[in-house]
Image (cartoon, rainbow, N blue to C red):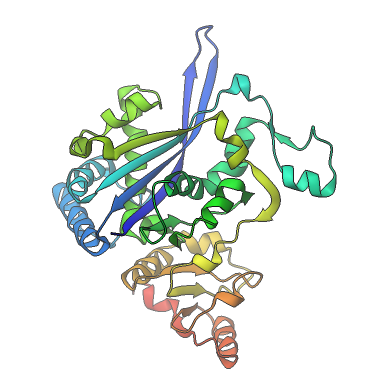
Length: 354
């Protein structure tokens, strides 16, 4: 039996008032793994759960898969999330929550880039990060693969397929061990709105944050399972794992070498060729046509990714789409096809409402 595991992560932040009256903050990264043994059935259950949740608040469904960012634009967000969880809880085989819980008193500075230091013969006292830097500059970028690394120990080769929201950052030992685990994986850019398991993980993470805040509960093991009474029937299959100081040697960056996720991209990829220096990529990504493009790609079992000429050339495949919105983009796609890449041109204007 193969288990399908979708993982998404988010930053967790709380302000607090200390006993001496001063203000402080608690920062963490949380991740959720949503697990099923039948991906096709789960996909149908996901669509039904979204339909149920939106009908309950009287809103039409615009996309196949929703992320918490989509719902944040709706005043009914909390009601939709709760109704969705009520339904989708019946379709999951297991749920695992991960969260960082470091002790700042024992962690004023963290030694990082040890492999680089050895390679460049840098002194043992540097480079370092404090724990907030470690969270903001490293763990928030690569936490999906750290969660996958923790789960990998429970699966043998050929028994698990990981669906991970895209991640980045610098190489670390946990990521390298996961790469060597011989477990199938697919990387989904914008995975929280293009894959049912990753979307579910995202909505569960959002709900966990919200429910703990409403109940004035801290992010510790004893509070996580009670935050989801919908999953009571899972028993011990609803798990929570902290990432602690003892895990630091595995999860700190080893060298300033970017993690390469391109070989694991889920195809078909809808490659976006911007080819216009006047338009910022982030502006395009925040647009409604781009969001609808993600939805179209998801319905085709694929993903959307902005083409990066530095890294992506070798990963263009026949059957992928080349998305363009000007003549320069189309010319680039046609040029690639002259060299056998087999991209299907796709004009972004199709996604723009008239």
